[in-house]
Structures are given as C-alpha cells and as structure tokens.
Length: 164
Ligand SMILES: CC(C)(COP(=O)(O)OP(=O)(O)OC[C@H]1O[C@@H](n2cnc3c(N)ncnc32)[C@H](O)[C@@H]1OP(=O)(O)O)[C@@H](O)C(=O)NCCC(=O)NCCS
Image (cartoon, rainbow, N blue to C red):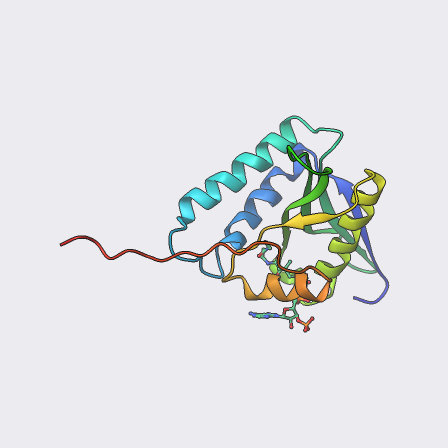
C-alpha cells in the first residue's frame, strides 16, 4: 500500500451496508463454548444501529477509509468507541468494536486503528482504554498484546454435558 492514505471519518447511514458486511467477521474465528453466533451477531448489529441512529459526544463510530493512488477509494474497516463511567473509579475509553475488511488485513491497519483509538481517548480526557476479546480470537489477541494491552480479568467457561 505505497502512496496510500488512511482516513478516519464518522460513519453515516451510507455506511450501513459496509458495516453489516463485516459483522460475520466477529464470529468467523470460532466462538468459545457457551457463545451463540446468532446472539453475538444480533448484539453487534444492534449496537451499530444505535450508534448510527443517535451519535453521542462521548462515543464514536468511525470508518477507516483508504485512498490509494490509481485505486478507487475504499472502506477498509471500522472502529467503535465508548466512554464507560463505572460506579467507582475514573471513566475510561472502551474499544467496543474493531474490524477490517478481509482485503485490508495484514497491512498494519489494525495497529493504526488502535493508535487512532488512543488519540480519541486522550482527546476525551480519558486516562486508559479497555476492551474485551474472545479467547479464541488469536489474531486479535496478538494485535492487542503487541499494542501494549494486558489482561485485566479472565472469564472461564465449561460446557456442561446434558443430563441423561
Ligand atoms: C483482528 C484484526 C483487526 C487484526 O488486524 P490486522 O491489521 O490484519 O492484524 P495483523 O495482520 O497485523 O495481525 C496481528 C497479529 O496476528 C498475527 N496473526 C495473523 N493471523 C493470525 C492467526 N490466524 N492466528 C494468530 N495470529 C495471527 C499476525 O502475524 C500479527 O502478528 P505479528 O504482529 O507478530 O506479525 C482483523 O484481523 C479483523 O478485523 N478481524 C475480524 C474482526 C475481529 O476479530 N475484531 C476484533 C474483535 S475483539
């Protein structure tokens, strides 16, 4: 991707089809036991629709847009950010969604989007950023680890055999 520029812009209604096209990527790596694909997809879709319908000042839904010499401009992925306000402790940025189109993987864009997420969090006056990732999502976990994220809590699960 020489001579290419990555631009982040707020998502609009025109982006709905693109956003929806990326949803299956949130389950393609194989979910841990106890997770239901349909429920994960429905939840992700609902959050995206809400963010598109009613943008908030303390959250962001951003489209990653690549402009490249000699190529049509293309949507490469998206980033959804929230501000969490726990009952105790300071507010923090929450990286709610991050996804790239398949063609945009392996080019370093995931890391660039994480850097943009940090810029956004700092501009919001927030001091740290959190996220959740399915344990089975090896690629995303590697990306986050490389970017300096460390484990905060661990959720454990065991599939139960049906009663006979
Ligand atoms: C996760 C995602 C954003 C990664 O973006 P990316 O820019 O393509 O990331 P990279 O190609 O740099 O991969 C990150 C690391 O994982 C490694 N990797 C690639 N495929 C892998 C795989 N199948 N298993 C484990 N590691 C893998 C890469 O080699 C890289 O490691 P490195 O930095 O040591 O070279 C992108 O794959 C994506 O959109 N996935 C679908 C949606 C998703 O899972 N989002 C995260 C939800 S929490």
